[in-house]
Image (tube, rainbow, N blue to C red):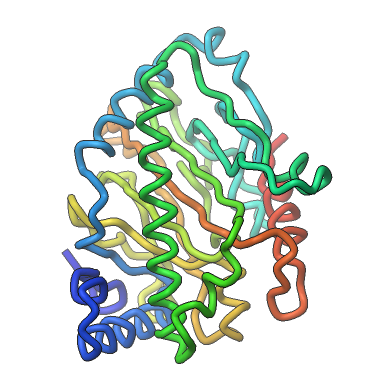
Length: 309
């Protein structure tokens, strides 16, 4: 499934290295990012079986009693469990929405760079639930694939911008990143949504590029464009959804738009609908100057902004 504003793009020709094919792929990326800030990619080489395994393992954690999950509870931007009511993404737009109807397992960059102050804020150890020991090796395998794919995408984006393929990746030698496993339970778990309440409220992402593996459903992802308003995002079972965030939009001088999106509340006519997304947020090296702002000062402010309560 595709749309004029959000195309599905096969990465195979880009990765194969044919100059003409690479140029066509870069041009298609450029057009999509000018319009919606979103596109879908196939030919990415990330195992479907691995993604299924992570969902199955994470579901085992999310379905534990609240008392078993509580020792892992953290605030937005930390490593652990974000329980019900922890996050409200609409706050980033200045909208006082009710908290998002989701739970998350949140992981982030953990290999220190040797600067104590930077390491203490951005490169801390991850927390792994002991109840699901197989989750750690599966997620770490996935994260290795996401890092490689994100750098490939940034190389493509450099060319799409009319620059060299290392225009962005020269700033990802030791980047920060975040990874959320988002669980969207049904109404049979969360009850009736409050007015204006979503699984994830309307917002734009904060960093450079987001790579999303999602499931389709009635209460799924919607993308906003000036031309079409809110529309259901196209979906392909093997495709990954890619969107750019605020830092990338700024980096391009506004040529590309940070993709505004939301995840609808669980539908009333399918009250047991449960979805799960694997969301990889790729950023840049701490201290990177993005057209006059410190990238990580901005990221921290935005993470603080969406903390509910």
